[in-house]
Structures are given as structure tokens and as C-alpha cells.
Amino acid sequence: MTEYVVSRRLVLRQFTADDADLLIELDSDPAVMRFLTGGEPSMTDDEVRDQVIPNLLAAYERWDGRFGLFAGYEKASDDFIGWFCLRPEREGPLDEVELGYRLRRDAWGKGYATELSEALVDKGFSELGVHTVWGETMALNVASQQVMTKVGMSVVASVPTPEDMQGVEGAELGGYRFEVTREQWQQLAERRSR
Image (cartoon, rainbow, N blue to C red):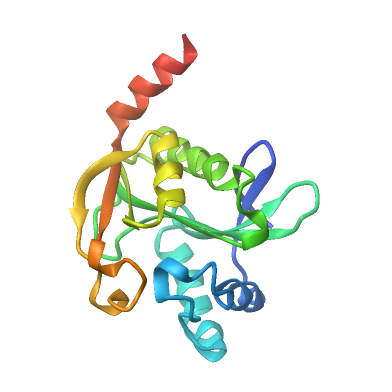
């Protein structure tokens, strides 16, 4: 299976048609879905199999495998840890991409989100011609904000909570949009190398 990104402890690969159960299990954990749906699964099992997986596979084709949503695995155990995305908006420019992640609870607190997010940001800027990497998170989701900050992103705007997330804890507080540009990333890389 083709590896998209390899870091010190982890690897990202494209999802396959047989991976629906990984996404179903991930989305069925109330703690994982706390800031997305208030703890409920976002879709039924059939929707994941019949819509989500085909859409993921079609996105790989649409973007020639350059962007998409990828399955994360520990190198040592080959255990699934969650997913990461690096992708433009569906009709958006290819040089402005979203960074996102959703990890299994047993993968929390190990630095995995930071490790793979940093590798994705590096890939976007150094290999894929990206100009801006952005991500959005709820105001209460401090752990996600810390990951974005650690990979060089900073808050550029407050954002309202999407209509379909109004019932989620902290919805009234809205969220934040984080960004990092290629120029900012290059400056950070220069400072780190000194």
C-alpha cells in the first residue's frame, strides 16, 4: 500500500474500500466526537460504507493522490490511530489546504497529532506547491489548538460554530481559524535549524 507520509513513529496511507469499519469505530467513540457532534456518531454505518468511503477514494483520483484524508498507523504495531487530512476545499484553489485530524482515544497524549501534522505541513509546502495551510477548531478544543500552534499555525480569525454543530458543548463560544503560510513556515524552519 502506498505511503503518503512517513514520520519517526507513524505512517499515513490512503484508505481503501475495506476500511469502513475503522471509520465507524472511530466515530462511535463519544469522547472522540465531543467537539464535532456532541458525542454522537456523525453518520450511520451504511452512510460510511456507501458514501464516505467512495467519496474518499474519488478524492484521491480527483487530486491525483496529492491530497485527501489518510489513515494513520503506528509503525511498530501497525495499529490504526485515526485519520489526518491535507486537502483543498472541494472547489477551492489547490494551494490553500485544510489540515485536520481525528484520533482514537488510545492514541491521545502521545504527540501523534503533532508529529503527523508537522509532517503534512512540511509536505504541503516542500512538495505540493501549497501556499497556505489552515485549520478550524472549537474554542473549547484546547488540545487541537495546541497541535496547530506547535506546527507553526496561528489564529487569524474567530469563526462562528456551523449550524449543524449548534448543539455541541461550547457552540456558543464559536471557534478559531488557524493558518500558516509558506513564508512563515520557511522562517520557522530557518529558526529551528540555527
